[in-house]
Amino acid sequence: MSAPSSFAGRTLVAATTFVAACGPAGVGPRPAPFPAPSQHPAAAADATPSASTSASNAPSLAGVLGVARDGESGEPRVEALPIAGFLPAVLFVPAPSKDKRPLLVVTHGAGGRPEPHCDRYRELVRDAAFVLCTRGRETDRLLPEEQRGYFYDGHKELGREARAAIASLVARYGDRVDTSNAMFAGYSQGASMGILFIEEQSVEPALFSRVLLVEGGFADWTIALSERMHKAGVAKVALVCGQSKCQEQGSRSLAWMKKGGLDARMTYARGAGHTYDATVRPLVDEAFEWLVEGDSRFRPEGAGREGSPESAPAAVEHENDGSRRNLPPSK
Image 1 (cartoon, rainbow, N blue to C red):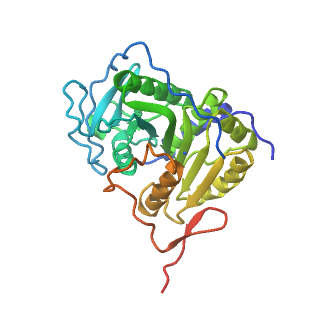
Image 2: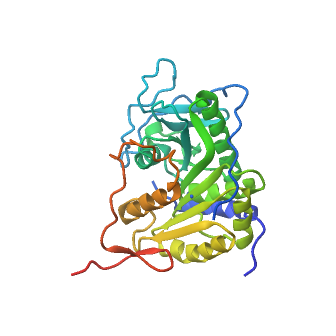
Image 3: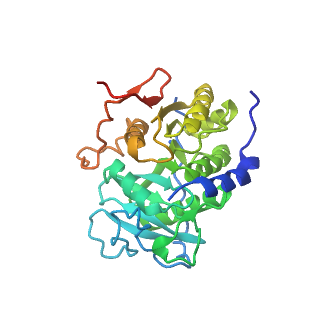
């Protein structure tokens, strides 16, 4: 199987496909922390966004967005983070602690919104990490904000947005955030575009050491790509699938990842479809726990467990290839 040297030539096809199809993460070198900028970036032209999603998918973050750090209460909270040149990101800020908190960067699917994804991953980090959720561009800015979906206009732009968002985070909370060995979690278009921009950064110290890809970013992995990412500092990659196409192509990619030196795994919820909910949900929980295993920053002593993952349904079991498939319930 011949391996392409880069994903760049496939970017336009990927962008077109996912804008149409998407609905409402061995040990390598330690990645370098994101450098602090000299000053806080100016706010984007768009004002603080509403926390509401579309009526069918409203997150529990509604009503808690703010932008000011002055007079902060010391309690965990969610705020809009201005990003120079981009729409504001959604940022979960953990309570202050004596140790710096780690970073998780999250991307959504085409037509989606960052709020429900930030809400979901806040559960998984148990309020112990910064969760930075990029917004992308509006699909239709003529709609009321609460009805808008968002998408990423190519992997290069997503890469610039992610880096600018991290820079803005460091400018605001550099005394509290640890950006080394950060984690990336992407869904659908956000996963596919995410892996494209991470691949382009593989010649530098990697921004992320662990990568979680849900229903996206499962195709086109090669041994050479995996070797480059591992050399740059990516250590672990988890694929989570709900569709057979993801499972089939992801199985091939899993083999190339392992041959390229990455510690990788794939799980599959047969028949779940293109979602990170339903029977995919416990697989995302398990993949996250596997990725953060051994990192006490994500699991500090005394971290709340109210958002901790529940055990997977009994109808799901591991297979020898490292994937998971739904089995008929036992009678």
